[in-house]
Image (cartoon, rainbow, N blue to C red; front, side, top):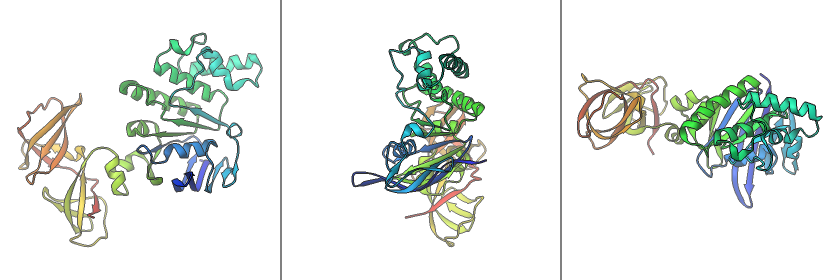
Length: 348
C-alpha cells in the first residue's frame, strides 16, 4: 500500500499553549484510521492541521508525498483535495439534497453534476430523495447527505470530526458500520477524530490514542485493548480494574486472586510491585470454583449482565455473565481467571 498522509514531528499551539507535540503518524491509501482521546487532548487540532485550518509550529504534513504544511507555510484547504464531514453536518437548509451534494461540483457541467449526485445518493442509500430538504430528514439521513457531499468531488482524503456525536447510541452504531462499508467499497482514505472508542473501533483499521497533546499508541483496535503500551491507554480503552501484585518471574504475576502467567515478558525484576489489569472478559463465571465473590452491583446489558464483585480485601472486579445467569445483589458467585493477555505496569 502506498502512503497517502504523513505527519512528521508535528507541533501546534494556541497562543503560548502547546496542544499537540512531536506527533508522528502515517496513513496508507485506502485505510480508515481514527484519532481517539478525551476532550482537550489535541485530536481536533490535529484534524484542523491536516485540513489546513491550523498552522504548524514545527514538523511537516505531507499528502500524496507533497508537503502541505510546515512552519511558515500552509497550503490552502481548497487545494488539498480533501472532503470533510463535521459534527453538525453543515448542510445548507435552503438547498435540496441534490444541490447540497452538488455544492462542490460547480466546476462541472450540469449534466455531469446530476450524474454524480445520483451516484452519490445511491452510494449512501438515499435514492429518490434528491428534492427533499435537510429539515425533512432524520439525523442519520442528514449525516449520509453530508457524507455524500464530501465524497462527490472524489477527494484523496476524507476528514471526519465527531461525525456521529449528535445521534442516539443505536443509530450511531448502525451508521458507523454503514459508513465503514461505504468507504471501503469506494476505496476512500479516512481520518476520523472522536472521543467515543466504540465508534473508533467500529470504523478504524488503526486507532491512535491521544492524551495531553501526545500520541501514546497507534495500533489496531485489538492490540489497543489486549496489548496497551502504557497505563493511560489501558485505563482509557475498555473497562477493567487494576489489582496490586508482584512480578514473580518475567511472565508471571501474583495477586490476591492467585498467580497468573501471561503472553508477554517484563524485565523489571523479580518482586517488582505492579498493577495488573483485569478486564470483565478475563473473569469467567464458574459455579464450581473455589473463588466465590459477593455481588456488589449489577448492570443488565441485554445479552450479558455486568457484575461488580467484592474481593476479600474490599477491592472489586468486573465480570460479564450471560444474561440468563441473573443473580441477586449480595449473592456469592464462583469465578475463574482467564487472563491470557496479561497486562501489568510498575506500581508508582
